[in-house]
Image 1 (spheres, one colour):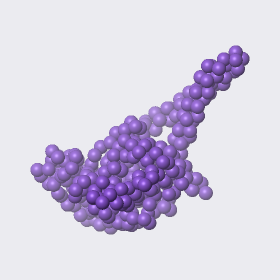
Image 2: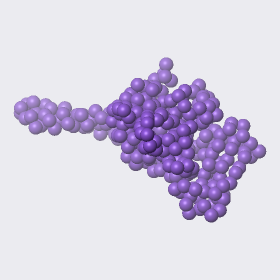
Image 3: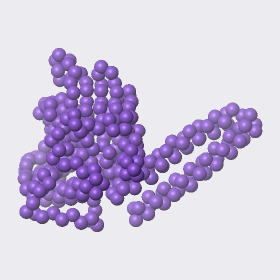
Image 4: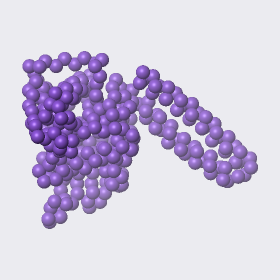
Length: 315
């Protein structure tokens, strides 16, 4: 039903684009016939806006993967470097939450491990909305920050790393077999933003899938049973994403992506001092407006990565 609704929306959008194009051409003809500059300016503005809508609609057509339309889980982990990397992980979390808010996606906090002095060690957030996974999937990888540290009394420049991992929420129509004997389940006391009201008991759950090494955590609910159910859903999603990567011949060992948070797996570099520059190391897209990026203006980077990924599949 949801797919049918979005297909109808897509068709209606195409029809509106066709109508607006026709209106724009008519306005230009009227303006030229009457030598009316104001009408011509109005028509040019209409066509510029139309071009942006067409570009966005074109990108939407690239989101045709098996689970691109699904909600997704977003994990962020601080790399080595203590407070510096933990603060960077929190900055990335804020960046993605701003992006989600701008696109009217809903964000649900599932787990957070606070940093030692500032920032966070890790967090897991569920992003809900049509094509959430499709848009965010190319954000998986290591993000590098270069800046003058606010935690260094000598104001020296520091380089920090944090990793981002995105995987789709999957429904019950997709069967993922999980053997209970392959699981190690730990309970612990909840902490952080969503756990403040539940930290009197060991309600938080950590599940390790021993064969793959995948670890998932949830501390969002008062109930240990509901946290366990949510963690199992996350595990199913992670296992499914793992299978997708193998099928696409883009598999990268889970252990490597979690432990080698350093130079080797970078996808994007964010330089704040001595100059400002954000550059995607896969597509070459860059901008000097680093603050806009950190405030969630990621569409250009996501679109370029998505187009490159689709192009590579075509090749």
